[in-house]
Amino acid sequence: MNNIDLMNYWIESADEDYNVMLDLKEKNRNTYCLFFGQMVI
Image 1 (cartoon, rainbow, N blue to C red):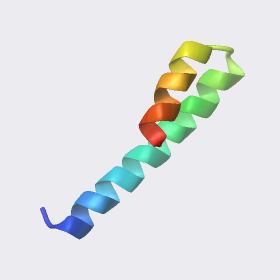
Image 2 (cartoon, rainbow, N blue to C red):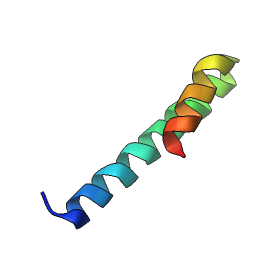
Image 3 (cartoon, one colour):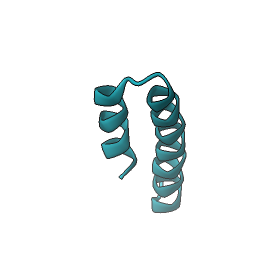
């Protein structure tokens, strides 16, 4: 795995975590929402 592949992996992972964070926010699951928010950052 080269650096470009690694960066793409992290970007895709952050994008998925962001979507999970938004879903959790809608359901007022704030603790888990914050956890996924930090994963995005």
